[in-house]
Amino acid sequence: MRTQEFITRSPEETIELGRKLASELRPPRLVLLRGDLGAGKTTITKGIAEAFDAAEQDDVTSPTFTLIHEYRGPEFSVYHIDLYRLDTQRELETLGLEEIIADERNLVLIEWGEKFPSLMQQFQVEIAIERTGPEERKIQFKNAADFADQRG
Image (tube, rainbow, N blue to C red):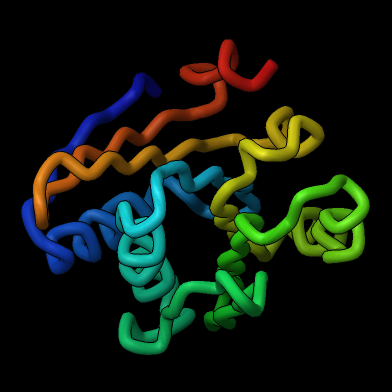
């Protein structure tokens, strides 16, 4: 699959795009969510989690302080992980990500994963979100082959 690019003009459109992209994210998948603070990474996760019947959009919140949120669906679990507050490989290793990633029933969405080169080799999909206006976002959906040169 080639890189797909989308424009959303509201949080509701970003959530809806997350629902649509979920069909491309059947577990097991490890997804890099890339974007600045406030770009919409949690917003798109709301739609993805809803599409897997893992959570209602109002129940999906940023894992900035808890680091990991798990949303259990009937078939698959969606893990939303935020590495923004981690600085070292040692801190990363204490999270137990290997077990989460290894489970074939898990879709794992990781924010700020680009901070850790050891993780970059494992990502299968990247969703990059760029703020282009107060409510408008440019969202690129790339599979591993499309961003291999960025992974090292």
